[in-house]
Structures are given as structure tokens and as C-alpha cells.
Image (cartoon, rainbow, N blue to C red):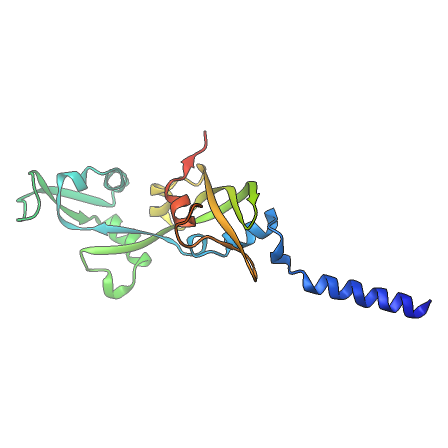
Length: 198
């Protein structure tokens, strides 16, 4: 009887070891894989350009927000040869803008006309559904922006949630997010086509 119990315990252990947690696409596994992806770990960068800008760039929603907060100012300027049609604007950081932006960029780039500012990070809110078919699956999820600083809070609402769908594929070592465009949507495509929730 004791040999039978030991044999049964060894058999159960070997069965458990042979199945990886990545063999079954659960909401928890999908959450872990999405949260660990570059799209959710890498901060969103905003490129702030100062100097002479076309009217189209200057009246973009982002520049209007920065102007509303008093971080940039502009004066009429002559258009340079590649900027048309007039009017053009000379965009500068205000003293408040310098105070806000300088701590967010490397010191060696603080005086350059292109400032790359980390402003927000995506946060996974939850998995809303999984549709599997063989070795492929579509995972529906919601996410939101988490601002990293004042500029991020001005440009990205932390209250607005988005819904997206991404493709997963089951390989010999378990489930992975689809990285190249196939019948399923890649994570980058899913995030770009995200729709705000009402």
C-alpha cells in the first residue's frame, strides 16, 4: 500500500511539472504578459519643439495646453524655407516652463530646440475577455495613462480608460503576445487603435 501511495505521489508530481503555468492562457497570465511588455513599461515621450514653428504645429492641442499652463509663449516670426503657409511663430519656454521642463530632461539637452520629455506611462486596468481558437487568442483589455509629472498631467488624463484587443499565440514554451502583424492585432497596433470608454 505504501509503494502505491509513493508511486501515485511521484506520478502526480511529474504531471504537475510537465505543465507550465504558461500552457493555459488565463486572465492572470494575460495580465502578467501585458504588464511586463515594453508598451506598458516604457514611458510615453513627448517631443517639445521650440524655435520657429508653423501655425499648424503651434495650434495643435498639445501646444495650446502648454500655452494655457504658461509654459510656452510665442511671437510672430518669418517662416523659414520649409515652413509654409504663414503665419509662423517663434516658440520659447517661459520662466515657468523652464522651471517645469529642466528637471525632466537630461542637462546636456536642456538648451536644445527639441526636448524629449517622459510624460506618462500606460497602466493595465484589467482583462475584460479572452477568445481562444486553437493556438491563437484575442485578449480584450482596458488601460489608462498614469501621468509622471506636471506636463504629463496636463497632456494625459489619468481618469480616461481605453479599450484594446491584442493577439496572443501559443508556442512550444507557452503563450506570448503577437509581435508581428498576422491575423491577430499586435500590442502596438492595439494601443494605437484604442477607443476611449464612455
